[in-house]
Amino acid sequence: MAMSLCLAATVIGIVWLFLILFSLVWNGVPHLSLSTFIEQTPPPGEQDGGLANAIFGTLLMTVIGVGIGAPIGILAGTYLAEYGRYEKLSPTVRFINDILLSAPSIIIGLFIYGAVVVPMKHFSALAGSLALAVIVIPVVVRTTEDMLSLVPNTLREAASALGLPRAHVVWHVSYRAARSGIITGVLLAVARIAGETAPLLFTAFSNNFWSSNLLKPMASLPATINTFINTPDTNMKQLAWTGALLITVAVLTLNIAARALSNSKHDK
Amino acid sequence: MSVSEHRVSLLAQSAADRAKVLVSMATGDRIFSTVTRVCAYGVLLLLAGIMLSLVIGAWPAIQAFGLEFLVTRRWAPQLDEPVLGALAPIYGTLLTSFIAMIIAVPFGLGVAIFLTELCPIPLRRPIRVAIELLAGVPSIIYGMWGFFVLGPFLAQHVEPAIVWAVQDIPVLNTIFGAEVISNISLFNASLILAIMILPFITAIAVDVFGTVPPVLKESAYGIGCTTWEVVKNVVIPFTRVGLVGGIMLALGRALGETMAVTFIIGNSFQIDGSIFSPGTTISAAIASEFAESSDVHRAALMYLGLLLFILTFIVLAAARLMLARLDKRAGA
Image 1: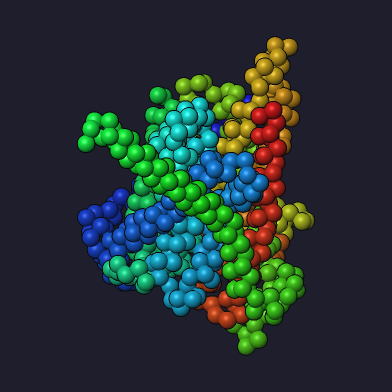
Image 2: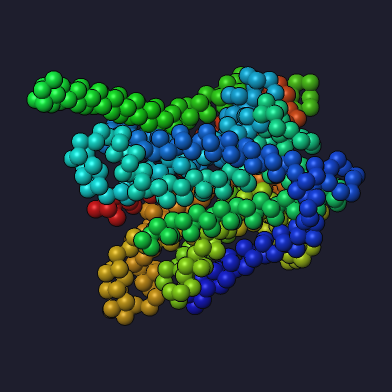
């Protein structure tokens, strides 16, 4: 009896996933066309328009966010796994990192607002990228440390016995052995920030035209969806569904890619 | 130059090269270890920076309202002398998270039990991946889906029936009462939150159930226990600490979730005891009002953010400590 309840729970859990995917495809696909990718976001009342500037903004800010966050995260993870594995402060760093990992993303937005937007006196794509970087760091620290800890110590000892300094052991032995795991972590971090909305609302803000200036507000897919959902304009609502479909497909693809990568490693 | 002289000079040169290489390697090592150390301590600085930035941003509101902020029910930023209190968003945050947990915990554990004990092995991986993908869907998608699909459905087909069924029962007709049933309500927000945290609970529970030594389960089956008895008497007692830790991790997630609830909670600062009326949460209030706020209003939203951060910090810290205890036991 209780066991059939468990089965029912599983079925319902999976049905949700398909219901959500189904409504995304149902509402998002009809409006999907070439103009989605090449036209700017429309003002209310217009009948066409696309999401080109929002897609560009998301790509740019995600790349910069990962570009800043991933190296810092990898280096910090390296310290926790290699140099400072048994140091006194390391457990504290791990603990704080785990908490930052699940800290509400809107708090990160407030933090960057106070630390970057207020001193600069205006919203900017740079602030948005930094907020995303702050979200990337704990994810990458965690996976890097976990993956480096899986590298057998005998490998490190063998390299050290040849007289290699620690930095070379890390670069040429540990990193090489843990490479696919570390890349998986970075991919998961990309998947995590690509759909983040809350930290962008008051850092990168949004706009309605093409902009590649990092010091100016910049549109992003999630922030655009957020604005368009709240309008009465049907065309904009349609675009919001299309944007939601794009972002979900991108995030799910990244997740599946990361999973495939880590599996191919386990199979070896 | 004789051959032996040549050899001596070569040796001297290679010794000098060797020394040079060793020095450069040692320097490189020192630089690399310092850089990694700085990055690791940077994580601590990040936490300090977040705290500091929130406190500085909230300072005008902390000065103006003090701790009374926590118990003030009114939220009137438009007045000349704004009166701002956090009671309504705190109430909304705690209530939606509570309802979401009530729904999601049994479901999540049910799925985890199914996956670890009952599911045919070839199906295990696909189902687990599907549930984990559900965790990867960005929260704004949940919010949007709740706003356009789930909210209207509940308001048209489910909630009127519940309101009608309990209209003459005291207490229940307050909790489930509503004069106007709309697409936006605390209950809808809670349901979306529950769908969001279900995969987290499942994923953690599956991991935690995996720490039960097979010998324990096998001996229980060996003395004739049914699957349910094994789960109830062996698996769950053995993993209790880890389960509570995992559930609190999901709670931390629910408390701070923003985009999934902002659209369908209505951002209305009222406390009327009904879960079918609109309300607000801390994060929804910040997301809806921050961009248009100024001065004390903005500082008060920062103050809300600070409260949320402290609240989630405590919950997450407790969760991590519990999970760490389980790890220690599994390692021992």
